[in-house]
Length: 75
Image 1 (cartoon, rainbow, N blue to C red):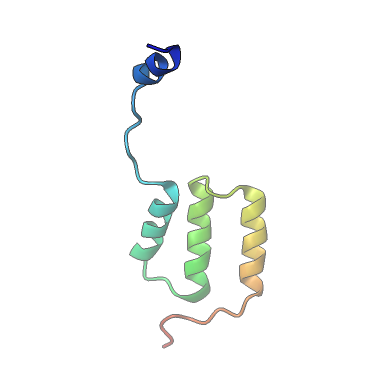
Image 2 (image 1 turned 120 degrees about the horizontal axis):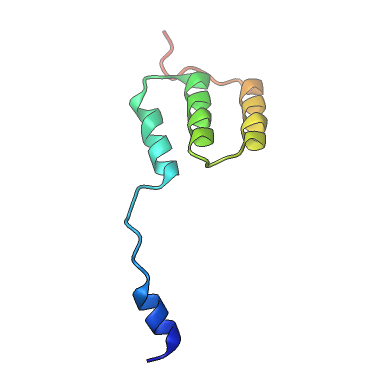
């Protein structure tokens, strides 16, 4: 057998786990946030899960704060 196939066969297969982005999205949908609050919570989750870094977080937060985001459930 070629060396490459022996090496590949010896490596354990990683366990399947949900991706961090999917977990973050699920976490946001569990909340009853609306409008800007929903976007900021999602952004916090992305930072906490390592999907974005601090520089990206800061840039996106500034961008969200400039947007005119309406509430999903006006009351």
